[in-house]
Image: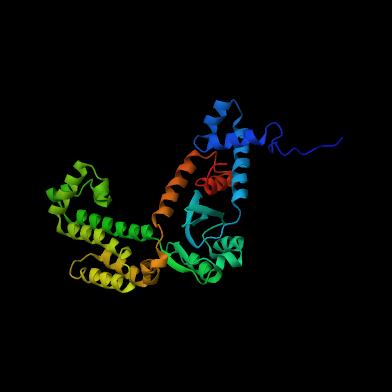
Length: 317
């Protein structure tokens, strides 16, 4: 008996590739459970057909040659089990998911997958302050400028503001506490995201507490670091910002200023015209990955999670 391979069949011989691609397109906007119920199929069958569709998407795309990359890690399960996600910041899509942890060796796997030529062509790498990522990038992509992600930096500043809020609540007593109690997220949120009631509460809080008012103004102003077009202008702004901390007794902000000073090169790099990329993309991708986590067909299938992440922003077949 001779078996003949038919190109139009899917990996599952009971279905055609055309049907597999239809299932894959349906799963881009719906859960496996919903698609299975709609098409009267078993959930495992839908998942297998979707995986074939996503693998075909990646095969068609080939190995990318990014010029600017974003590096971040995600936790895939409890116990500090992390994987690295690398994105093309110019094309705005994830290109690599893998590694065993957050080590330099795991990050080196991505550069090995790209190849020496494409790794050497990377001109910008955006990441948090995690040293193994910097070491791997310096070793495998030496021409790349390293830029620290604005949102990770600002997260540290938000934590400093919350520490001031907590310290003020402990320092005060009686009626003076009522302005601070229950206002954590009002204080930490962007003003444009607050409701009218939230804005009124924030205005009352800042009027009642001078130290929190000062800390809030310092937090809002530091974003200018990423707006200045020259290193010298950004440095001058930072020195003035740090000088304004004198006599304010805001220890968390003094620690933040020292952190900025230690990692200045990775922050000032954004001021160069050739390094102007969308810093919000990586953060937006992280939010999308969290949605995929919730909708995924069990995180035990890591290959499925990898395919979902790498194809979430690619065009449909």
